[in-house]
Length: 346
Ligand code: NAP
Ligand code: ZN
Ligand code: ZN
Image (cartoon, rainbow, N blue to C red; front, side, top):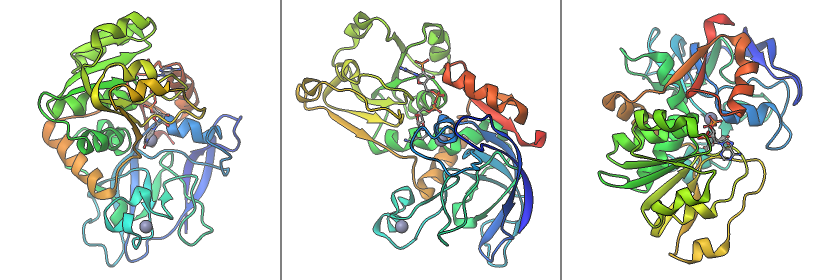
């Protein structure tokens, strides 16, 4: 074991603060990564504040980390010391169940998430990327291509894969009409990735002041959702909606913009139940579904896709001491478009 610095939550109501956590020495198939940057996902906030149910404290959030490999176990094949590597939302899984076997480790019957989870030994708590180092099985470490701006790559490890996965699953291609609901961390990646896949993108936002940015990010259309009349020109126009909203909202108006058989994918995970009028689904045989991050193989595919298409996150780089205020600003939808922590400031 070795001790590393972290910035962690000790209760649902207290601000995050500096702590020391333990990381394991690398086993044969592990790598140790010195973390350079870690994005702040809204899931970090939901978890730090026990919004999805009781969190185990202390909790060190952060599942969008990139850095350099500094130690490797004796059986590690894909990484050597000095390589760039990333870690997303998963650090282990059983490897034996049907979902693991089909490269969907996020749906393993015993997934090990990067934080607020327990290792497969059943006792060791996991801690995330608001820390200086992480020890992880090489299988769950992602290759990051050299020459990219690492701090802008970090958010791909969650916001990137969470939006790439449903865009790919629902076969977005040149000419597809995609709606993106909520222009935050996930939303802005959904716009960029859908655009890179050739889609025509419509952003639905509660923030009128984001229209210029939405278009700069690649959207063709912008709908300010506060006025229901603004939905009317988009009736029956879209093939797919990626809904990234982090708070309770009514899905029905968005459904009205889907074509027959269109699909509304929830990735935003509001803690409270949402609303949907039955008729919004019945008319047009529309589908409402969800999507959880993506498997490790697909995450690597997404990173390679983004490297090739030069898709990066738009970020605000902050020091560790600014994490608590960044949480408040994220909740107010005041972020352009992902906060990324410079881990050197730990
Ligand atoms: P974020 O940066 O805070 O973005 C969420 C956006 O939702 C806001 O920028 C805002 O966009 C919109 N919004 C906020 N409150 C709203 C409200 N009351 N009504 C309507 N729109 C509202 O958050 P994020 O990091 O992108 O995460 C978004 C959600 O996805 C969170 O719930 C997170 O936990 C979840 N998530 C899920 C997965 C998964 O695997 N499914 C992975 C990562 C994150 P506008 O200003 O444009 O309206
Ligand atoms: Zn996340
Ligand atoms: Zn499994």
